[in-house]
Length: 338
Image (cartoon, rainbow, N blue to C red):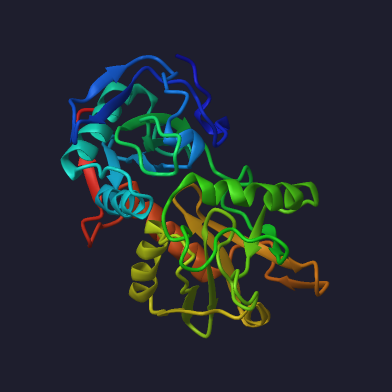
């Protein structure tokens, strides 16, 4: 195995094993280990026709002490449970979820990047309707799978500010819809505007609320935050996916002296922020250099260097994840011997 850890993109890299489990006759079976990268699926599976599909993303960090650390995996179980409930799929028990992710880590431990390379081992749990239906109704059979892959930074620039664009002519998700759960359809809906933004030179997009187009919603596949007057401000909306990273940053923000506000954020408030960023498992934090509003032809500029609070938040969270800083809230699970 010869991997240039420092040059890894955020993409799929083949590893040795994945795990699978199937729900039939009202119960989950035993976990199976596979070396195959493909799956057999019924042509009438509900995942293919009616979007019964949800996934999670979490990372394993190699610490300075050599130990691997898994960050807040219990929150991923809770979120996958909400996703399953939201589109009427069989829920994955916490013990099964835990067994699956730890088995993938154990079997692919050589793919966990070394400390200091900027790379991590990304886990992707996947739940989908595998049973056949032609009518629009939930499947009776489900598949739960987990694979892992080493990844580099989500944005190739790493921890450097990137430009993004306000989107007014597309919606990622509607109020009281599926925006607050992690299902594939939300991401499919974001691809076209994101592709247009990339072609125009922007790293990502900033969606507004689907109802009034007045308030900031998601920042592409991530949560948005803004900082001003010693306040950490992040949108409150029932069409935003609750980010485990953002939840963690809110606590860290309080610890470093910021007041946390989760509320509706008018798009015009972009003009008042001192620092802005996007946060999520993939990028951790992506500082934002500028936000361009195409319709109003306005550019909100925040500079090409990460702001002091954004830098402190990033260093602190990454330090906890890698074991370099005290884990006051027991967020990390140390996995010894891998």
